[in-house]
Image (cartoon, rainbow, N blue to C red):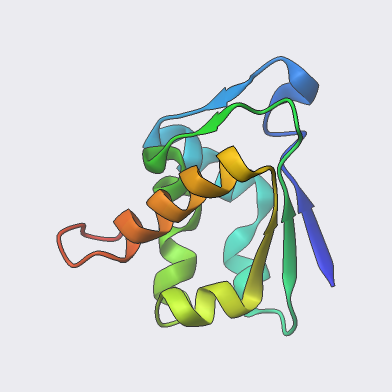
Length: 107
């Protein structure tokens, strides 16, 4: 299983709150998620314990293209598995719901 660790995105502990759609898009590019979406197999996304928040807007910038590329929430969750504390998992669920909603235009 391929692993993506958000420690680098969070500056090794300097950033405790990941927020902003533009920052999410920049993180997506830095991590090469367009290419990762196309590789076979599951992906583990590790969120360091020091991260307090992943805002829904950051999540959308980071993963809305993946949700689209993988044809929706269910296929996205089959591929991407999140290793995070319960609080962060709730933020991730909100981000997935927002990115998957018909109200939100995916970038």
